[in-house]
Length: 479
Image 1 (spheres, rainbow, N blue to C red):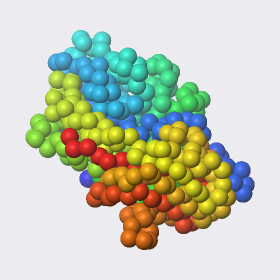
Image 2 (image 1 turned 180 degrees about the vertical axis):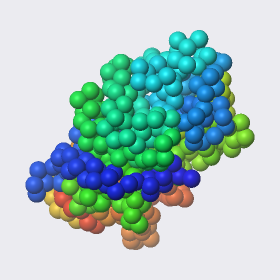
Image 3 (image 1 turned 180 degrees about the horizontal axis):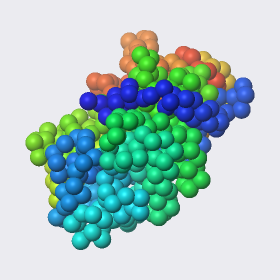
């Protein structure tokens, strides 16, 4: 079952509490008559491109994906837990931050919380003195990587779950521990999983209070959920963003985490060109069939070629890729997973081999200022057209061969391009080799090798004056 399809079970009371969350999430929007822009935190978050998810709990030892909440803490007994190995593998793969499942749906806490005995404090690991969260944080900081936490709102162990305010207080106390005891956090990750607790009841989550707590304790962290308020789920766990993918959304279409209607998938995939809130998509997927480690899946780890495809269908579609890699029962990433991360990095390097083949080209434009800036490699330097329909033409001293197109808008100023076309001059006329809708932070298009001396990018429609930061073509190198 999709981890967040359980959201169908959201209760009417959850809907009532969710509505204010939509209102508060819409506060940080652009002024009237202006298109939304990202906050500095949202911009930095998306430019990271890659983050690693780490799913780890008692499920690792019961060989399950979802725990029941009645598992003994003594099951959690890693023999060689090495969070530094996780962080080094992530860094070698080119990932910039990691998110740990500090608590999954089974309620077992990976830190010695004061809120419950159902934690590492009651396990034999480190003689009950261990703290996975602490070791995770120190490992990430040691490698210069950002830290993120997932704290499941659904707790199948806690008796107060479903009781209303009493559970709210319990959950906020756990969230407060995570956000005050471990230093700066770059992302706090929520889903709306809302199943039954041990007493058969469901909790109506107080999302406004949850968001206020994060804002108060970690004001620079971005908050993820189906409904944001800072970044949104992309609508599937296949690693694929929409071929049309706006960073802007209409908050009313997905008003709270767990909201489910027939159109929600499309709303999350595509965003909304007229949306009032800047809420870019995060595309999550696991390197294995499951989210937790299972010995039976050691031979089913995604190939580096598949990971490269996921990179192009997420980062290359104006999203960010969140790739899950689960530790084994020993407490380390499996050797196969580590090798695939390193190979994935080599594949990406080969994709952009040789640098931008448009370097040194003469650049002409339909109008606007400084068209040559699209070749300077600076994501904050851009050509601004003087009309919503515009073009850039590139002429080289000799023909070059390429099989990859990379386009970027200067998204610090918003996302505006709705349709674009890339062409080469051949046989006395322009021939299209790539056509698409949105560009956003990054657009990647792969195709069979093409040779050309003259090339052209046409903006067929934009909602504001286009600001193009990058136009690049590459000839990928086999690895």
